[in-house]
Length: 191
Image (cartoon, rainbow, N blue to C red):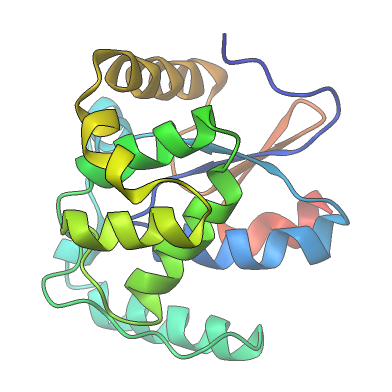
């Protein structure tokens, strides 16, 4: 079941989101606790809400500049945008779901986010995901069978549906005390 621990903040993420990267890096200090990370498919949320990513619009240059400024203000390394970002993130999100099932969601997400947005690696490359798994304390050789496992696939579908049903309409969304806060810029309000 997709229940969260009592009173622990839940942070809904998709590894393709640079705003989710910022939120994962900033949330513990702002909230005074490590949130439970909940991997969901942002592409499905886009489809359900009838709109897509800003990354494919004329907003992209302004959003990239905003993200780079936010990272600098937070004391994070400069962004290194992977060629072709955003890539197909389905395998990455299945890997994140598998990591969550192993109790390693945070370690895997941090590793994957840093490989992608600090090192410029493409998360559509399974060898990059295997490297993230290794850094997160997971067996890299177990990643490929895990992302093909029907139980992992179903868990990701269920988590995404549950997030939508709970009112999540974008990523990152933080749930604290039954309230939803959408966007990295809402972490301070949530705190």
